[in-house]
Image (cartoon, rainbow over the protein chains, first blue to last red):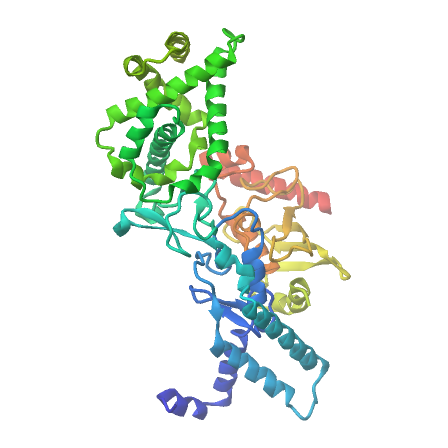
Length: 363
Length: 158
């Protein structure tokens, strides 16, 4: 190596050399623990920390799965930070020179630093050997990445499998950017919108999702109706691993029932507290079928692609929260009147009676 | 050696530098217990707080600091009238002390951020709605209230 700086810098004054050394020393100190970084790791945004410190930070509070971020710039860390070998060599050199000073032969500070280095390096090496770097947080968790060139499908950053829930069905990784509250992935690019616009877009998106989620879920849940399930299979080719959902399906159906129950009960409590449970079930079953049918009718543009592209909604039967369901249910209730002809159900009478009540109380 | 001990050791030297000349006092209540701190600093210039000294009580959870949480910081109760400060308790609404905390911040950074907040209130999520309203509607009245309250507190201290 014989670059220009190699010739110029050594000829500079002592003061300059001190400035350089001071600057280099500062850059060997971890901003988290304020100690020297004997095992410096660098994030994709270029910030260095002790392996141990960054590990603690990334695994801090992991019970609420959220994005892994850089402490200095808050950028999302997607890839496992790697050992910064150049910086480690500088730290090592400094400590080695300090330790070989014959005058103050190994003061207690230097000895303690040497012990620290040994411990840090040993910890890193053992995690590296056991393949548990960063407590495997980058293996056990992943990001859902949505690529517009790939039909906007959300894929696991670990294994490229299609993901739609909080866990990757293939590699079992917890999806970090899956927002449990909103039941979706953060796919709106915040920078593209001004504040007001963004709120509007997010509101639209939420409404849209809630609607499509219910439609898709209701289709799925309607297992008793032969004609409907075959219709559904046509409308929804099985390109993705469908059975992924089956573990959760029962639970979701429960929640779904719960929310419809509460909707009905809310509206009728005063008038018809004594209503039979069976009747409620019939009504639900009927409603579900009708909602699905009427949505199909009204949205011709929603072909099979629609369901494929919106499959994040598929996992979110419980996004039927009060606010959206109350806004959304009314049109469906009205639509029931014509779709009911398609459905020669034995329980039509009780269902109709029920429906009319719901309709009334809505208005 | 824990982070807070390192901060403590370098602190008095840093407080001598011009950068922190506005901090008149920042130290643990008891040198053997670094979980309770007090701070006194000059209100920021070109703000209603200019010319007054403000007091902070700082509590640090030594188990958690700095990875899992920052310090808990309160103004001396019933001294600071400010949109982001609860008058009765001195509680401060500052993102840095809550969700936006990351372990690179130090006690000095926190005190600096609180000082900046005094000069530049965040009106999106005020803790004291009345003061926020006055700040918005009649800035001169806000200045008068702030200074009256600080003067009151100063007299009470003497």
